Image 1 (tube, rainbow, N blue to C red):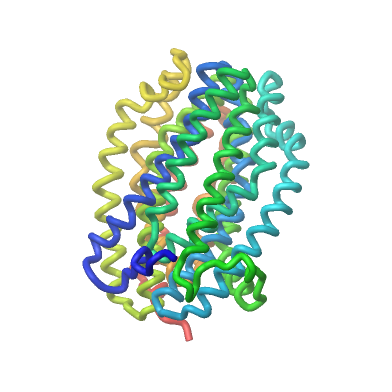
Image 2: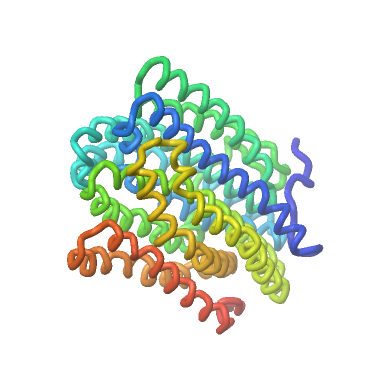
Length: 449
């Protein structure tokens, strides 16, 4: 039986130390998860060529749709778990944990089938170039077959993280990463299976990670640990999870949906644009992992302290999050501004692609990361209180709505790649301003009766 001290309460003690110690495994977990995806891209790019490499990203936002929907549910569940843990309500915690796992198994099977069948239609709709279409479809369908393993890992990761344990999922991810590297080389370099081999390697690696997370959850404290015989769906707990999770899922799904819309426009500019944008996503995802790790740390800190009634402590936690964001995002932004294009050469050593990457980083990405960071930290704090509708609304209007209207109405006036990508920087600034205004009003922190 795992000892209780593997879970961590953040309701008392030094705030910076707690946030930083909680942040590190989440960041490195996100970093190595990106390395996980970058390994697929690197091996495919080196051994299968530019076309197969581009295929991994040509439908990337469609691939993320079922996962981000489910991550919304996982976030809703983790908020309830963190608040229950902070308030020492172990019965609610136990029931919520078993309900989430029951929901995970059902959702994994249903969504896997739906998106597997939708894959050919989406490849066509997104205007994937003909030479990439076969590779894109093979990779997409392989990942959808193994969707349930990704669901189990991410739900288990969210629950363990809500209990203050962000270390073990990180260790499991390292194991999975090592396995994925070996399998990528075997399937792609040895068997010459290109993008299909990358998909199969990912699914096998995720299956191993899912089993390890299930094992960890079954060894939690007996007051709330997972018992496979008790997995079921409690209506009351499911309703509470859906109430918190659905707004997050709607917001999370809106991002890849609008990005599908944007990606289809980018795809129309040809292979170099697709490849350059794909490399940009691989490289600057390090920034997103940094932002996500800080935001999740603040959200978990907020949820535990909200459950314990420590409202003043929450504000101090948010301010600490701002300091962490400034100390990490500013140096990273400078690095990518000057060297982002050259880093992309690791994947594809193509002069036109590298030049395009330099322009993307310098004009549309690196100078604006800090706005995204501030907005996401405030959004995480608000979600930690259980008020998930407010951040959903802001993101839907300032990010998704703005980007949709930009691509639909503004880009046709000047249909260039630069004009298409301008929507990212403007939408981040709008979102940041909206969240700062919400934060300063202070009503998000009021206890609901």
